[in-house]
Length: 268
Image (cartoon, rainbow, N blue to C red; front, side, top):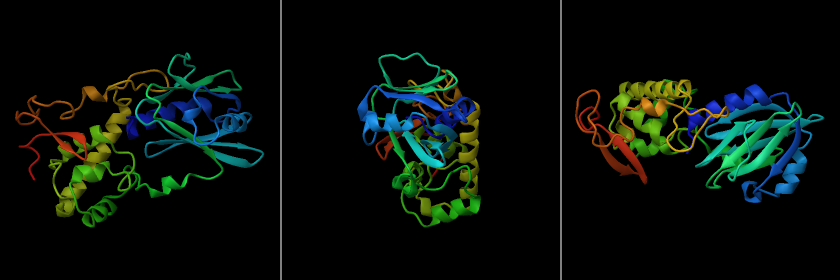
């Protein structure tokens, strides 16, 4: 699933080519992509101008308007959704947005889990998400941790705690911070909380700089693969020696997700 870094990279690419452009045509090749009526959504999108493209956790928000009437196109890529600017339509193409300058935004989704929704206000479900991990302060992060109970890895994956973190980056941040993934969040003191906060920010920014992680089918809006997966220290490295101490990386399951860690570097 595209996580915060991948969505941020896609958003930056869409922002460069789409902001200020008018949508000349919208087509949905699979109606199940749209929450609501697909044809009505396509008709509404036609003629609207893209004013802003931004990220909200793992969601893409495209602000569109016409004659001061603003709408919000909310897109969740889920497992396999991606946008390609001037991409070639294929068997997994689910939507196409033609822009007035001749460019095209092509949306592919192999597994059909992604969803689009056009509305005149932001969907209520976005208000249920936690704060942005790249914007929250160290003190705010510690305060949130101190009132929660449960394993820290599970908490980091909870989008109501912080929005946008996923499996790869939670594992990598916990390793950099030397925090065991089964540590109870309420037992993490201010010093370790600050270290974990810094690690989360560093991992996310490093991943954005690397263009995200291409583990399965993810590519940027330019069609380029990310390469942060080549820099990971624990994720997907079960049985391989820790690059810090040499201990074999272990894999356990937390919240139904594979979790990778070093039992020596990350003690409870």
